[in-house]
Each structure stands twice: as structure tokens, then as C-alpha cells.
Amino acid sequence: MRNSTIIGTGFYVPPWVVTNDDLSKLMDTSDEWIRERTGIRERRWAEAGVGPADMAKIAAEQAIADAGLQPEDIQMIVFATLNPDVFFPGSGCILQSKWPVFGTIPAIDVREQCSGFIYAVAVADRFIRTEFCDNVLVIGAENHSCGLDLSNRGRDVSVIFGDGAGAVVMVPAASNGEGVFDFSLHCQGEYYDKLWLPAPAANRKPRVSYEMIDSGDIYPKMDGRAVFRHAVPRFSEAMNEVLQKTGRKIEEVDLFIPHQANERISRMVADKMGLPWEKVVSNIHKFGNTTAATIPICMCEARADGRLKKGGLLLCAAFGSGFTWGAFLMKWTI
Image (tube, rainbow, N blue to C red):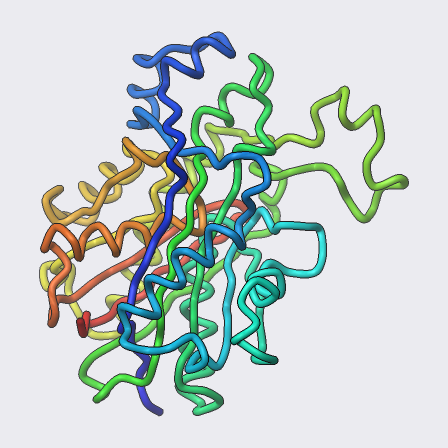
């Protein structure tokens, strides 16, 4: 079967910059505390009325233009997000409503949280490999800021997340010697409640109530120690698995883009894998954790600063809520 590859990238982050000092005015925290534990200095928040699909459209416009295509050339949308614009339908449908030129092409939402972009690329890759379609728009987009608990109760979670969107256009590769080589994809659902949003929930009647609001169940919950304890080994396992499947060695990797969960995690993974830090893309200090959007945003920045070059071997990996994790390896073609 034919390989898939990426021929266009784009991203968008809102203009509103929220610093650690800004958050310290809302909750009992500090710039030093946040930087030491996460590496984050600031993040972007969207204004009211701006959802994931709005940000995705801007990123997608850039990616499609970068690919040298027209919007009408896109044959499928794969939209990764943990914060859809509404409970249903999916944000892929909402994006399509904002861009009628897409017509009636299929739109798929991928709900794999921080691993969402890895999974979305895998979905697009399989549709391209099986010749169902040629031009697939893959998006990771999140609006976290509208759903954060900006009190002391929620500070451990709320200081981490930011808003933004990243997009890529995937097409068949010119040869099997380039593009996406393979994936590793995993989930360990027994830990689903270590990082989750308890409400609204379809197994609760009503799905949302005053009691849920008062208790804080409408805000994300995280067992930070459990997440940290699992993240480093799972990142490394996914990376080693895809390297083994493709017959490559870590020394051959030119650039590593990890999901931007925490700078300490990224550094520990790099050390464990024997990757020098100059081969690792990190922008969490200025954008925070934008979950499904982190990797495509990093791709754009790495292209802009010259680190992601045509012919380079790129390794991407993620770990997050679910727990889910995965990685893919590709030879960059633009």
C-alpha cells in the first residue's frame, strides 16, 4: 500500500496572552511555581464566542494554501479535539458549516485528548493507504479556557492549558521511501479517571445539575502524580515500538516533537531515549498545553525556524487522558 505524507501545515493561537502572573491574581499560585513544575510562562486564551472550529478554520486555511491546494480539493476532514464546540455534533461538522465549499465530504472527530493528533494522523493515513481518498485535512484544535476552574480548587489543572489549533494536509507520498512509515497506538482505560471531566455525563440524570456545578465536576480533574508516573515510560515505549517496527535507531532521528504536556516530562523522555535537547521541539513555555493542537503547532514552528527540513526523519509521540499514547515516524517531504 502507498504511504501518506504531509504537504501543508498551518496554525493559529489567539492574540490574548495570559501570563503566570495574570493567573496568580486569580488563584494562589506564582510564576516561579508554575515554571518549575511545568516550564510554562504564558498561554493563549480565546475570546468568548471563539470555539475549536473557529480556530481550526484559520489553521486549515494556512495548511491548504501551504499545500498548494484549494479548499474544494479536500476530500475528508479528521478533527481531533477533547473540547468540541458542542456536545454533539462533532467539531468536524461545525467546521464544515463554516466552510460550505467542503460540500458533503466526510468529517470524523477523534476524541483521544492529548494523543488526538497522533490518532488523527493514523486515521487519515489508513484512508489514504487504502485509496479511499487522496487529500485529507487533519486538525487538532482546543478551547480550554472557557472550561477551567480559575480558583484555588482548580489551580493544578488550570495553569497548564491553553487554546489554539494546528492543521496539516495529508496526501499520498511519491514513494514508500518517504512520508509516514508506521505508528504505535495504545490505550489503558483502567486509568480513565486519572485525568478526566466528570460532567456533563450521559450516565447521570440530569446530565448536568446545580450540584455538579457546585462540586466542581464540570471542570477537569487530574491526578498529577499518576499522570507523571505513567507518561515518561509510555512515551518511551511508543517511541521504541515505532522505531523497532520501522527498523530505525534513535540516532537516526533528526527531530523529535513530543506532545507539549510538561517540559519536565519532555526532558526526561529525551534523556531516557538518548536524544540531545537540540533535537527536541518545545514551545510549552509560550503556549502551554493545547492538547491535540500541540504537535501540529510545533511542526509549523520547527519549519519556520529551519529545524524541520525536507528529507529529515521526524518522530512524534504523545501521552494523555485515557490513558492513551502513541507515536509515528516519518520522512519529512516539504
